[in-house]
Image (cartoon, rainbow, N blue to C red; front, side, top):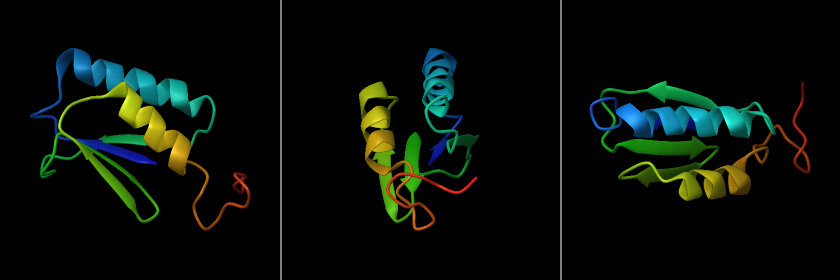
Length: 84
């Protein structure tokens, strides 16, 4: 899962919370990346294989639901288990 954010729109406490949540989620499955993208057309974009969810602000519940729904479900994974 890739969490992209526009640093001109997400900063301060929201950004801290986003990184903290990503770190917490990575304890369950480390396949999560958080990266700034200046040209992003939305404050936050959550992406996985063939899925995109745009958020107009940080929402921990939306991030968690997207993570739970899509993590370890890419074509390289079988029944929630991914190679090395």
